[in-house]
Image (cartoon, rainbow, N blue to C red; front, top):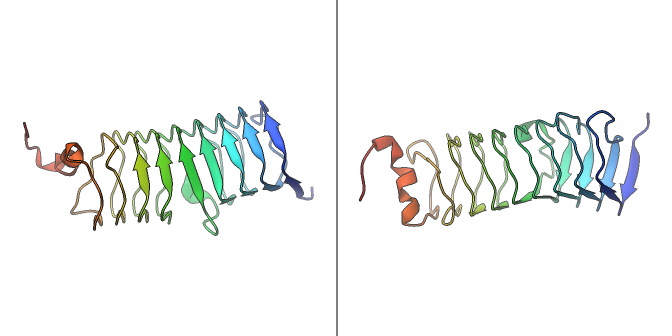
Length: 190
């Protein structure tokens, strides 16, 4: 089946769990309240698209291109972002649940994450220079070999980042968040 091109289209309340989204190129399209859970979005091309209120839990995104794509209020539990196409990868996240997701080894400089949940999310060996994590929750998230130079965690909570295992040059933290850098030492600050 030949790939198709869609531009300036809106897809609302569609269920793609049993019937896959047709393979193709999607430019400036909106996906609103769509269900992709446990489904396949592999080998697709999304350019300047927006996903709003969608459920992408455990969705296969292997070899998919996300160029300037925004996810807003989406459930993205278990999504393996390292399997997508890394060329032109530009993502934006607002109010998403990215728990148990993986960004392992990805290069995402300057990415903005607003109000996201990252419980048990894997950021191992990711390049996250100058990212902004605004009001995010990192309970049990994994940071190891991660480049966090000039990254902003000032309004985020529950992170546990070992400075000896990550690159933290000029990384920004609030005074209240400093305990997230000291957890491995099991010290008590009152």
